[in-house]
Length: 147
Image 1: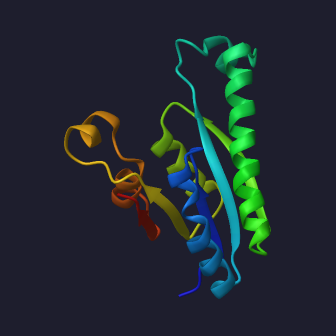
Image 2 (image 1 turned 30 degrees about the vertical axis):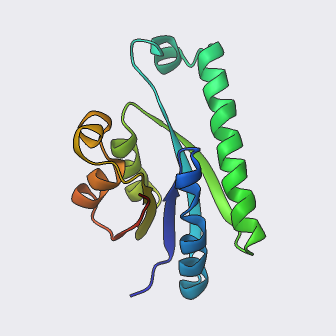
Image 3 (image 1 turned 90 degrees about the horizontal axis):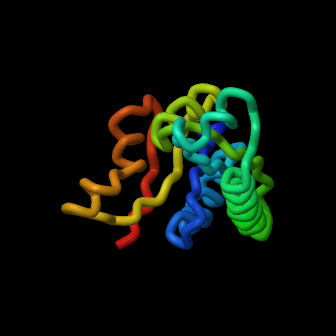
């Protein structure tokens, strides 16, 4: 099996960037293209004008700048390892649903993602993007577990 298009979701945390070395190894082994993404979640009540008319506000602008910085940091780590990557900021109401759509839209055949290693009540309250992807996406998911 060959993985030509690898998706690497990040969230700005140090834990999410721990996947870089694994994604680099996979990319080099399969000569794969890597796309690093971060989702800007949009609450329809707070971002109504942005969603309907594209009108930004200070909160959305700050979020976009923060995400661009995160993507630049991830990109620099990949480039330091000798891998060129594309980055994309995605927008949606749900992180895992937005990533599911990206898998289809970008013709992804492997997802490399970190897991924060939450369990019990923390997992119940905060959810698990990695778990949602594993159960709902139609491509392999390589999870780097952090504990």
